[in-house]
Image (cartoon, rainbow, N blue to C red; front, side, top):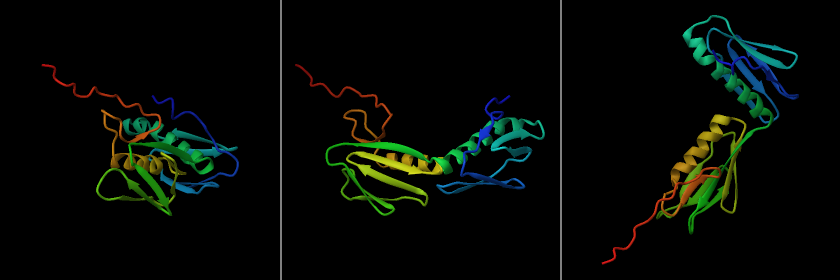
Length: 179
């Protein structure tokens, strides 16, 4: 039994939650997000508090109960506060620059890499830190993962793009043979 699904979601001021049958729309100062509620789940709103409940107890509703509550809570906090993810570029000559919705990377390849940001996601670059921000948690995380995949950190010198909180396990390099 999910304990996460039972927790109420408080809706901050300035955020409106609309529901049309199973279609949920959350609107706030940062933007609008939409979600289809799984069948046999019911969302109720009263006094600025959202509660999710199961209409029918099936294995499918037990599996998705906590997930749907978390997705709705992420939508509410996303349109009010937003989400950020930070990446760090390590390596001599590795650079990034933002121009509009395009990021240009110089990552040691023979050509620059152009990365297009999707709508609703923006990036700022300060020295070797890339800050990806937006109101959709899934989109922000996916963009950060795609940027990291351009040049994953290698285990010998740590060169590449990594998350700020990520720790790279370093390997010892070759040692010269004595003899």
